[in-house]
Length: 396
Image 1 (tube, rainbow, N blue to C red):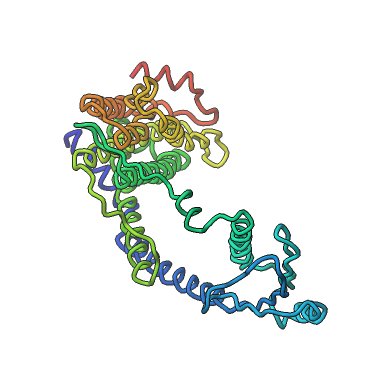
Image 2 (cartoon, rainbow, N blue to C red; image 1 turned 120 degrees about the vertical axis):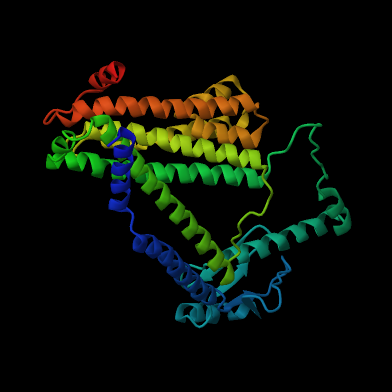
């Protein structure tokens, strides 16, 4: 059997080991059920929040307080002599609150329990106070509205330049998030597939029939294929969740803006290359771990978050030399380059270089992983140090 055939056979077995159609269908079905439950729960909460609020307001001459007709707040004016009786009604829960306006600058709201509707009261009081101040200053409402009217400013891009659209930013964010999700799924299954087999002492028998490089290649391909499939299933589940929520009255929307096809293609290639690069790294790390429950190397699972931090830093200046450097550097480019693509004009060769270096890095780490895998599988007890792992990788 040829080497490539053995690699694909191992990958096929590894993929079939984890991928089950019923699990994928269950994931999509669960998202639909969650949409129904969440929207149903929110509808019940909204109905409870819409219950009318009985608010007594003592008559006063400081502020002209009004609430819209048919709104949630049902205001009842009361004479100051009824204050003691109204306080007792609040204590018995017969009315929801008693509002006492003591001056233009001060008001007291007496309630029996924490009022979730107090923001609306505060808003109406602020509006009434502003109107009182305007009347005291003798300013006509029309003059004030004209003075506060914002300046209309339009942004026009120079010829050949394009603005960073919302749809492009969302597309970049979604692809980076999916890449991180797939990376974490792949890393988790790498630890199970490689470290678990190492604990059971079965890999030694397998590598007697196939080379360690073929075995690790099959593991990387199989687990990566499963992680990619599960990521796609999760993406479909999220879209279904949003669509069902919209049908049930949610205001959530899927952006319908147009993104340049070249940008979408570059984002997908960057995400896929970054996903494969991290999977080859975690395959090498998994081969050196004796017990994932006690090994400190589990903290390396947080490493894929580091490029996201760099991407957030370059938002204010995406054309800075440091931003350009990190956008082509493997490990950081899967997150930094998408940010630059939607924020500024990136030369095509920088995008191509970033993808090429990511693919080359994945290939080099795949070769190094085979060497580390071969030696790591034979080591039990003390885990190899990072210095030893680097030496093995150089020897590869």
